[in-house]
Length: 284
Image (tube, one colour):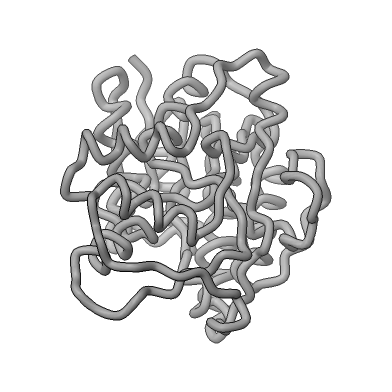
């Protein structure tokens, strides 16, 4: 049984991790306001005091539109805090698993998903701050895995799935849902299972970990409504009809090339994972 430190333990992925890997490992969670990872001394005291074999860094500032108007906050949370944590992990001999995102890519690649060796080119402050965090992990903690995920949902939310559950249960006019962005919907249960496997079978460098298969937000919403028996109509629309401060990637698809080449078992199809999620968590 290893001692595992999970940052961001009150977030959607952090909560799932605490529940899922807690049976096999000694798991210690931390989150704001317990420790401010933007403070180097406090971060060093945390990592040195816990003496964890592995630190799973899920803490992040993920309000994509707010990042555009508050770039200092974005870089403090996603780059500076990650720098401090990576340096502390290296000093105290802990392996670091840091959660990344599809937003490090431009989203403009049209003919295929992005794999781990594609060149990042973020178009948002959020993506830029997360890419800076990836660079800090690589620079300051050689014993690391950067685990990129996308289109995440999990018990308790918040997520697109939970928004659709709420809206689908309400009467009202047809819902417009974007149909020109493609990605891999992925449950926190799947990501937690990947992390659990990485605890015993480490993979160095960058690894993509999303469900197999791809869809659009509109197609995902339709699937949610079908699975839950909602009758409210949905109609497709374009991203241009819903302008946002931060542009959303048209292509968020992530190929699991490193995972596959390492001989790891295939991750579930997104529909299968969504069905499992609803069976395990009927209320979302």
